[in-house]
Length: 272
Ligand code: 5RP
Image 1 (cartoon, rainbow, N blue to C red):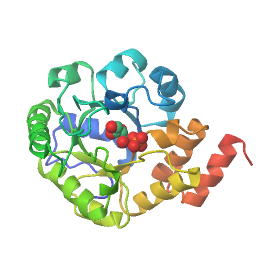
Image 2 (image 1 turned 90 degrees about the vertical axis):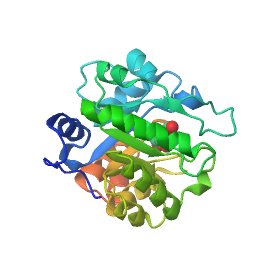
Image 3 (image 1 turned 180 degrees about the vertical axis):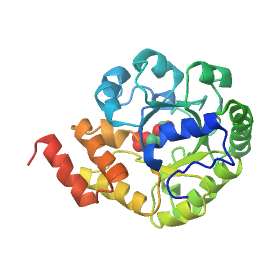
Image 4 (image 1 turned 45 degrees about the horizontal axis):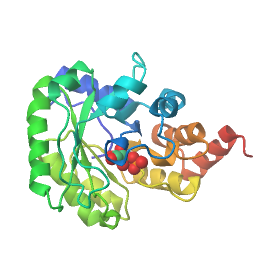
């Protein structure tokens, strides 16, 4: 599905309002800072408050855990909060799919979340548990008007990220009631978008070699029908993170090409 549009017949007002906050104008720049829940203090995210502060004004929403929300996110920003509620395994384990529901739904409501997010490990050793967790979360979130973001997680198997696998995993998230899906960009990405009946946002994955690679990824994803990005490392691990997020925002919300985004990046970074 391309972008997000209100569906009065299928969404209560609260659900629509939360989705509208996440997708102003139908598109979204979500800033992902939820990596620490299994990766610990990643480079450039050692002190989340310092990473978040300069980037937040340029994001529509922020994706994080309750621990980072409470300690590192200013209240009253008006930004959407996508609360990660799955977890339970650290990067020290080989199999990362043994996750549980780590934050309750009442806590999500109390924290004024705009959405709750859960990783779904299709094809992994704990596939059944992971899909059952998603089903339970949707059952709890829907009556409260909270949209669920399903995340197609691949653990350490980054080479799983092809269109066939990501279309399967994204579709399963949507079938179980996720209102939106976060997945990876891949060749033939339109196949993933076209077979998923809810909006898709793309993650950036590990840091790419150049900023042009990032702009190409985002522009290609948007051209294929993505509703935006849920991006972390390729923004805040860059030496010019504010210029990065503003250039990415230009692609998502203004329809800049990758080349135009690069020009904007260099203007903002003062590199030209
Ligand atoms: C961490 C996540 C991230 O939110 C997701 O991967 C997006 O971040 P990045 O752009 O750095 O990949 O789900 O578990």
